[in-house]
Length: 123
Image (cartoon, rainbow, N blue to C red; front, side, top):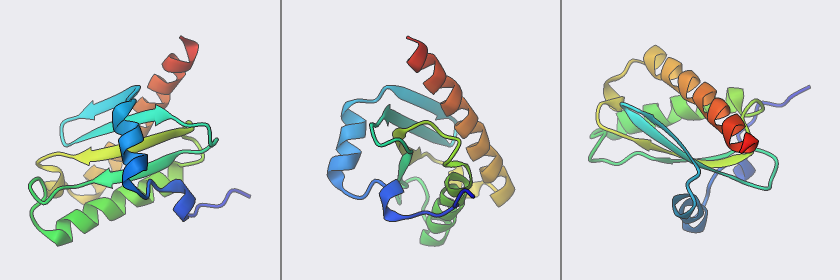
């Protein structure tokens, strides 16, 4: 049975992890309210980190809600994702989306990430 947890090992925890992704971005999934940057990792599972600035999402309540929905979407689909380290950068307007819209946006981003990862592996 597959476990749907969100342990520490699937999170980018320190600045070095984030810097490694920024220094070697191989996959970009742009969308209007967010940008997903990723690079393959040798761990065999996906890891995720979030950057949601106060400039783009003013209220802490909205930043936390956006982060919570993204984290839940990742938790449910992490076993289908390729082994990459990824950072999700929030842009202006993401805090204004409804929960359902945000969840659909994340599903679209996950499928685009899978497609781009397959193309990268074929090269």
